[in-house]
Length: 213
Image 1 (cartoon, helix red, strand yellow):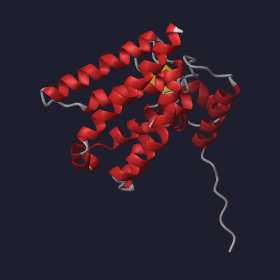
Image 2 (tube, one colour; image 1 turned 60 degrees about the vertical axis):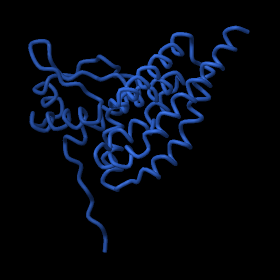
Image 3 (cartoon, helix red, strand yellow; image 1 turned 45 degrees about the vertical axis):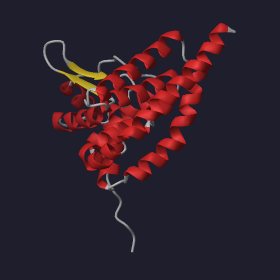
């Protein structure tokens, strides 16, 4: 039996057109899109359809909607928040186990750390050490160490200087799942703190030898 052909909504068409313009470089971060009324005239549709398209792009992290006299719909700079939210939702709904996340991190994070150790500068190493010190201080007073751990892994990914690796950073995804894995993550507290110290030491040693040679 033939499947019915799905007809794209006008809002979907607008989203696809804007995505193509982003891919081609016609739209860049900071660019302000036309107001809803103007865009509706351009596509011969209602402002509701344009608003729906803009909201979809905002959820994807493509647009930033600002209110007020100087407001509007602006193209956002590339970021990982939208990717984190989407992956966290999928993994959370799939009841992803801590073991599965740990396996993924063991596959992804060591190559990121190696790349970071080759590209990190003195300021990057100093930032990593500061984050580790703050995390250890939080542990000493039995405080909440997870934010520092997440900051560390983000900093290492940034040192790698590779946008896809930053976006795929599994530490952000793991943090986004939140309460679903809270009890398991508490049992792994000690293991979590070992990774930053080891990675920071390796990155610092590699960078030190590189800058001193």
